Image 1: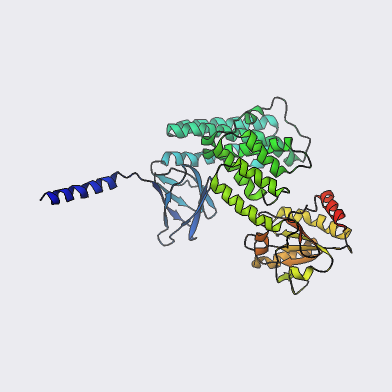
Image 2: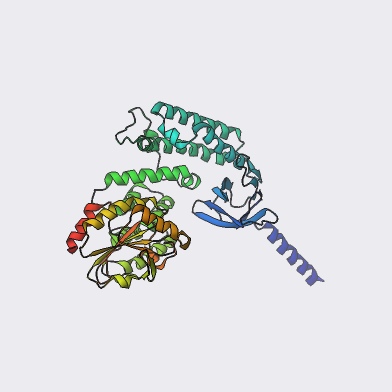
Length: 462
């Protein structure tokens, strides 16, 4: 009898413990009208997840574990819905994917925050309107608009029954949004008016954005405006410190190390920079060594080490990765082996028709080809549009009257082995290979950097 009682007590205790186990996930669910895709995307601070959509029931449900509380965007087709998610509180969204003027409905403990975000978004359009028109305003009109916007947002936040901790963070977020607008005004006004000499007046409150501290981790996670402001200021500090002949990517690492004290912010900034910059830097080993000295995040260091080890394979003097059987605009197929061994250096332009920066280089590349016509160098352009864009590639060549060897890979640079062997993250990318197929530089200067490129050609006897 005693054994039966003890067994019963044990079972009771087990169930009691199970019930008391704290919830460690949040459920995001919803109902969506006028949406025919099978999935939607949720993005946030260092976060991205694809969420399945049931087209028959017009609903979705996803369990989110270990997410950072904060602002996210649920991209439902072409309609973005701004949401606030906590790590354990569920949220349900009811929305029409096409009726953008119709606000989403939110259900759950954080409904007041999410309703506030929907109203907040409308304030931007109602008060500030089109960004181009906003930054084209004269200084007094611009400042008046920004003051009105800030005041309206603060009043809305106070009236929205927001939790006290969220309200405090959001009040600072509003100030950061104002600050980034003030920081951008001079630059954007110059662009819109084509006046490179435009300067704000001495009374312009530029001290507001430049006085913001760079090491507030809570605000960094909560506020995209704060993250943008920190990045912009660090870029400006780096530009002021850097010499014309110095490596900006390397200087940026050093700037973050000296200017930012919070480890979370420092690790995030240098990691995001290194994911791209390590593929561009002219001082690979020095860049890697400094990154490893500055970072305290072991996962990040492991990822950059893997990239560094791969990049060493495309260092100067290494055999170039190969490409095979790319479509040639003049007919037939062309491989790298068809171009090497003929006593000519090979200057490769990796580009795409959708890339505006690529197209800006085309006239300068043509001029370079004319300048070195008949010399011991071959100019080769490798297009990295997908196969369905082949006609667009051909039309662009005709329209731009592109010269040199024109090749079509039929794959994005993100899927093309040749591009990934070079760790190409952005376009255009220029590569210089010697007559024997060995790498001279995996990051050759662009045609727009004429003097730098000509100096290399001169040193090589081209």
